[in-house]
Image (cartoon, rainbow, N blue to C red; front, top):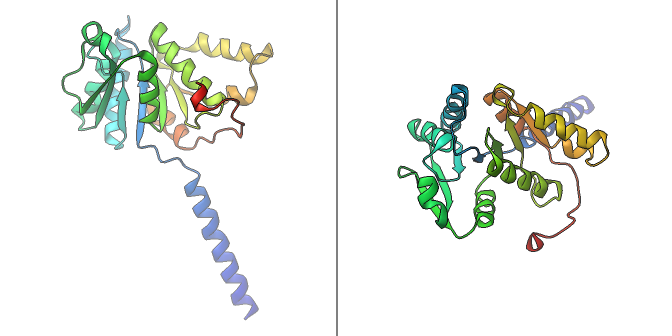
Length: 220
């Protein structure tokens, strides 16, 4: 009888551990992509952006992005759409003529301001991936990682470091740590890979640091 009870306890413990391990993985159903409105100088940027869109679609992950029909923004959207994926674009009214709204999207959401754009893209996603881009891409990336640092969300944020594009930025972030302006635990919030599948796996296994909310969402 005692042996049977020990076996039962062991069986229940194993099942609990398995469930805990399974539940530790995030369910990523929607990912926001921040990237350039240009294609850049190397073909690999467009190829990887297209592949990322295709990969998200094949994994049944909804793509959320800036809604434009130009540059890497177009490439990632087209990649997802061609693979049968769902793509939601978020575009400010004043950029409709400059960035040109993509006409084949599953849904296009128009907003008033750039801040509303980021807020809506954050609301619609379970995680963020950053591709090569310029000032706008970096601004979007840093605001999202800052929100995470403040505890306003616990979503994984990844950099797809295509062909070493973000190597210097990664070095700068590490300098922030070594010079005492950033904690290592906050540096570790940033997920980095040059491989799409590896980055997605890192995002699924991400655990946000246990940090307190310095400010409320209403104060952002």
